[in-house]
Length: 434
Image (cartoon, rainbow, N blue to C red):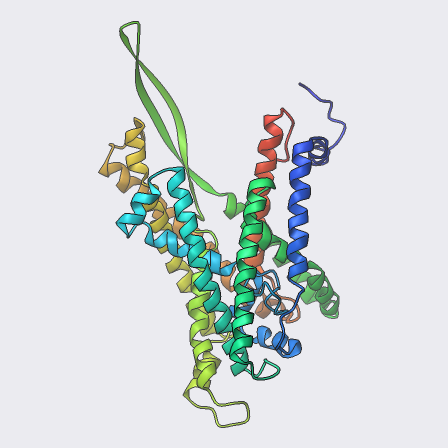
């Protein structure tokens, strides 16, 4: 069915979406869930000085990352302060231990029932991780003098229980979006938290307008970063694959052949290396904050460690750069081993032209994935230290390029657009892309 092109493709695609009842219902459902999430993010828990809490988050980069995953709920100490970070941590742990533990590996190979059991184990692991994170957060806030008054054991237990319930509730909302809405629910919730900070960033831009040259350079670097993120998120290497199958018809054997390709992504690891590296870099400073002398007293060894591991130092950003590259290679190889592409190709009678099946195919794919991962790792490491570079180049300290947030937002937006594209294509409508 042909349509006259009276509107630009993007506008026409948006109009087509709202004319389809099921797609319209899914989008409205997703927006309703996001509204519930943002409401919960503004319901505070008792016992914390919010002004002191805001200053605390401004000085600790690791907690700023946790606040990113909670959509700002942690900096306001709301009932969903722990966000979905415990679930993300549990998912990462399961991805790493499933290939190591034979029992879990056998469960993962059971198809859809196995996937559901692994998902159930991940949910169970989320509960103690959320409790540990919530309790640890309270202890750190109390040591930094952020709590209004000493909290009793019953109050601490009730606050931690509320945080755990908030995390599980957010995970449930995310799964509802995945099932009845548009896109990956967990990613959509993170995306909603990032977008909610846009008004704050616009307000800071008006403050930074007092330095027009620095603000201009900042805007140019931000747009360049956004373009590069889109390019690297979509970048992949196509490995050609041919299939040869034999079929028997009327007592005769016929050979059929076909060709396709394996898309090996340049950034297979996604955000995981940034999370791991940031956690490692913030750990020394977090530990030293418990033992260093207060401001005004003579500094001790722990004061030195705390000052070294601050995000505005060259040493910190250099180590951060190296750790991101290391974790990118490690996590990519773990994921690639789980895919077991050589065995899958052999079982499906597929082969790479010019490469023998079996070990030769495995060696070839490992060589390719290592080469393209090097480029992806350099990109992630550059994104990780980009706020420091931009601050040094532009001199603008009021605004900071949230490169990590941009990476998440671009990935979620592209994935959601692809799902909408697929829905429109199935109904013979033109989509957003191409």
